[in-house]
Amino acid sequence: MSLLSWKLHGTGTSIAPGEVVSTDERLSWPRTIGFGLQHIAAMFGATFLVPIITGLPPTTTLFFSGIGTMLFLIITQNRVPSYLGSSFAFLAPIAAAVAKGGMAQALGGVMVTGIILALIGLIVRAAGISWINYLLPPVVTGTIVMVIGLNLSGAAKANFAKGPLDAIVTLAAVALIAAFSRGFIGRISIFAGLVIGYVFALIRGDVVTTGIHAAKWVAFPHFTTPSFKISAIVLFLPVVLVLIAENVGHVKAVAAMTGKNLDDQMGMALFADGVATTLAGAGGGSGTTTYAENIGVMAATRVYSTAAYWIAGLGAVLLSLSPKFGAVLLATPVGALGGVEVALFGMIGVLGARIWIEGKVNFADSTNLIIAASSLVIGISDMAWTKGQYTFTGIVNATLVAVIGYQVLSMIAKARGNRAA
Image 1 (cartoon, rainbow, N blue to C red):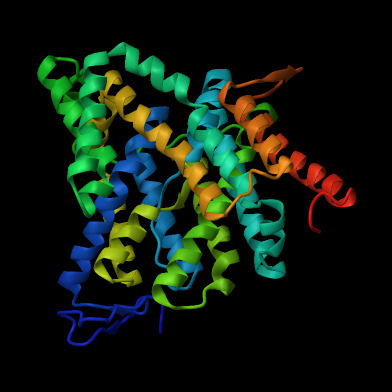
Image 2: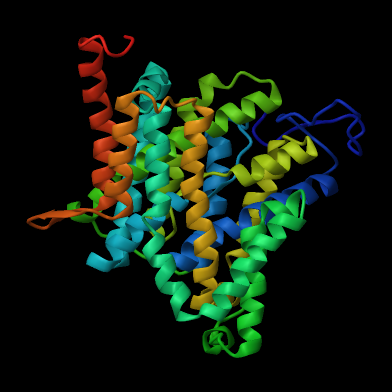
């Protein structure tokens, strides 16, 4: 199969019971375009929340999201259906880097994160993934993900307080949509709730529309050149570990759904996401990751065709060419943002607990317990220390304790006969 050709599934009009549309197949082009639009809708809310929260240009982030998705498909030879959207793991380091040195330094951190991830992908391609499983067991990855989510609690609290009524309506909308809706709408409850909060704030006069009126309907996205400073780059190192875990989990999930062995694509998936993140950082977009939201679409539709993802990537690039669209997003009222952040940051934290549960982490083991407990307090309370121009934030310190501390304590416990080798 050439890169841009797919076999027609049956007559191209339907999927028989028990059948799936495989990665190298497609339905008729009108139906394939429809599935591509579903993938755009699925990624839309989460992809835009990151630039809205961090202050990055939304249309620039969308542009690099679409380009990154198409690069991912090329690098993985159309074998791993995936959409690359904004990674929430970048929220905390971007905020910290912007506070210390501005957005250009934050983008430098994003870019270096991508380069490191790409290099790790090449290593995995050559040496396999067993060393990652050894370095990042579930107790470590779950702890890091939980810290990244809950470390942002203070930011959610501050924004909530700036518009409490808008925040309460938004949070209530998120909760009610999740409770009442099934399927696709339930999966985008965060974005749907934000839309309701936005409209409520607009009616109350809490939305500043000056920028919306001034924005052009069509223009190229705004690109920003990154700058590099070690003190900012250090803040992003924990994100690499999260991106590894997300990509590995995504490839395993796709392999399970499609029944295809994708172990040989694990390294290339990491490399591809690294390349996409590097490119985004170089131009002013947010770092990317493979999206679970789009896995949900595939599971619901039984359509795994990579042709639909090409449509989604192209569609994202076309949408990114409207500054008016981006201005609407940037005008999101702070209160509504605070309401959605309460749910979102908490969900990221709970995702860390889910990794513990699915990995069957034994907290009767004192090593697991002390590493998770210590890292959580360090990260959530943001215990930081400064040495010269370098500031090690709570997330960085929690990650160091989790990764290095786990290995040290495990070796001691095994040497003392307190843990199985």
